[in-house]
Image (tube, rainbow, N blue to C red; front, side):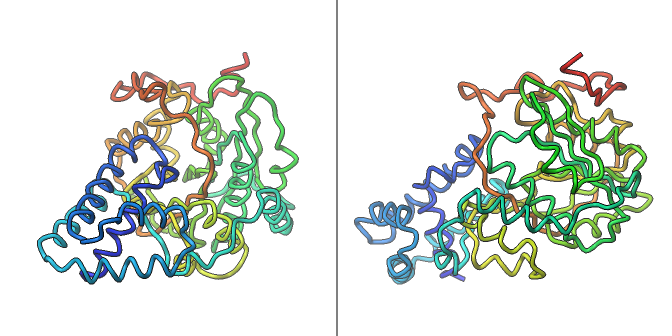
Length: 388
């Protein structure tokens, strides 16, 4: 057990020097400050005078497996004070329980090759999707899967194609779900790319800031006749059993299902490797030995399933939220107050992409709306909201 604590502490201390791991300001403030505390403890108790330089080297040369193994052995050998080990474990528990984010690194990660080129990944996904062209599209189904998107770069296109491929590979009969894609942008560039693999393709013209709440509401209005609305972030690939688990989880008492416990943010190399295995029959959890990223516990922004009547009862997503951030927190707090929620013990996988702007001069884009009660939204998801 002590060895595990020290190995995880080493990973946290190394991650402290990795600027790319600060995936959001809140992570930097809430998590990296704890990484710094762990680093300071190791600096104090490890007996390694050049530990900082070694951690920086490890961060810059992650493929140097021998160097990592030697440093790990040295730390395990030198750190024997149980009080210090307990203090390290206390910080790790904080990260898991309150920070809710822990760095993860599989033992075989360094054996992976460099990421495939983004154009090659997109080509691979398009070729893999061809067999899933929908000959007869569903008009209604028990579950409406809603995929809102704005493609700002090739990485987001790659991730959308990955999500679609993952959905089509799910362990559930196609008659049980329909897919509604909502492209919100200044002009429509992706109907020819996407429409063959979804049941409904909607272009929502918006030349201003992205409004994911509006896009989700548009999808919900389209899928209103479905019993369940499943909102799916386009950067997510989920276990093949997830949609069926959601379908089985709704009973008369349940109005909402959060279908995962942990979201695993993959780095670019892990994302490239993971994508190669989406079309295969291998269970995604068996890939974990080869992945690197952050494990986020007890979050709810990536995916949520809601009974259609409950969704419209609370007014859907608040369309006042524009840009990125906090519309999911607002929705969750309102649905939590309105109905009973069930959470499933499954992981989901978040594919890498450049981070969108979420703050201006350190302030959240939608800071004025946080904790501001929603106004009446009877007329939600109006398609010409930004173009009338």
